Amino acid sequence: MRILSIETSCDETAISIVEVTGEFPTATYSILGNALFSQVELHKEYGGVFPQLAKREHAKTLVPMLEKALVEAELYEAGETAVADEAALRETLSREDGLADDFITFLARTNLPEIQMIAVTSGPGLEPALWVGVSFAKALAQVVGCPVIPVNHMEGHILASLYDVEVDDALAPIPFPALALLVSGGHTELILMKDWGQYEKIGQTRDDAVGEAFDKVARLMGLPYPGGPEIGRRASIAREAKLPQYGDKPLPRPMIYSDDFDFSYAGLKTAVRNLVGDKTLTEDETNALARDFEEAAIESLYAKTVKAIDHFGIATLIIGGGVSANSFLRQTFTEKLLATHPHIEVYLPHRHLSTDNSVMIALAGHAQLATARSAGAIAYIRADGNRSL
Ligand code: KG4
Ligand code: ZN
Image 1: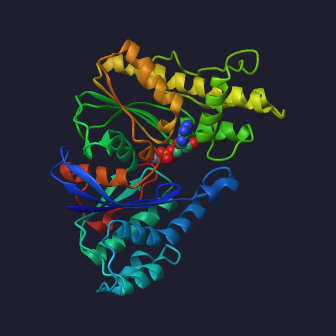
Image 2 (image 1 turned 60 degrees about the horizontal axis):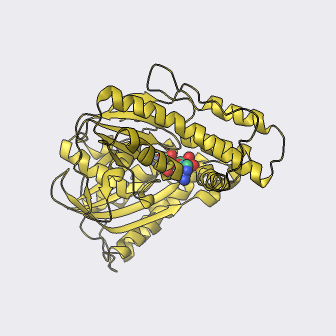
Image 3 (image 1 turned 180 degrees about the horizontal axis):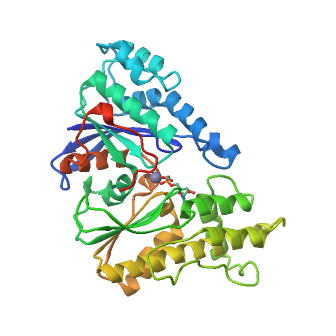
């Protein structure tokens, strides 16, 4: 079957076309087309994602991404796609600036291919941004005549980490119980998985998400948005140069010894703010502080994850979400963990699939279909900014 997937939960507008052979979880997934537009440059001046701007940009970019994905998949064909009820199509897209006009113009010059299913992120995320993707999925389904499956973005991150895009295009056949550490701009969670499709949240951040902490600390230090990659880069330089610790005492590791599986990042951020004050840091000081922060942030993740691994007798560790692109995190959760827990299999996403993308939404859509967790009429599909696993 051919799945078309759509992701607009934050500041990436992405559409993929994935050909699926076989049944979940042993299917193979070939990526026929994968188009992604990052709005990062637009949000830079706000130092974070501005929801109304993200919404407008998604509306402007979805049709070009659809065309790009079709061309890449060699499924683009000039011609015309009949629209049975244009008024209904316009109604579906009525809240999305200009999207109805763009889509109808596109249909007038394009013969859309057959698609068996549309998967769309319905949450969690920024609600105005999510709605654009959800409405577009419904509009496409009206034209193509196929079901829409609403997908949980975090399930997408979990499956992306298990997807071997280089060797066999399949999900790793993991032993359970598995533990997923989800680290992104909006989430820091530990999820216990006793089987495919079974998700139990056992821990989460009490305040800021770890990616958010990277971004906010970067901003405090005068570094560009998104702060995560920039802090990671500078931290590596500091480590290489063996720069001394910035400040006279180590940064705090909030909640690292608390009797639960929760996290906290607000205190660490405040500690950095107090340390920087209104000083202008030198290049070396900036790099050293980036490293000190990165180590404190990752150490907290590591401590609670290892605690959960031991407590639940975990066989597989899955790490997903944008922060999983971080090199120090990758090293910590492979080399350091291997020394004490050699029996644990650790899965990290391919670097291209670490941050938000739509391939992961196709994978999660297929998983949803298999477990029939989201059957229902298209009209009832809603964006839900706080949707949980
Ligand atoms: O999963 P994602 O792309 O979007 C959300 O669902 O939030 O995650 C984005 C987050 C941002 O906070 C970004 O700064 C962080 O992931 N990030 C990183 C790195 N690359 C992205 N954090 C640390 N090191 C990185 N290399
Ligand atoms: Zn994400």
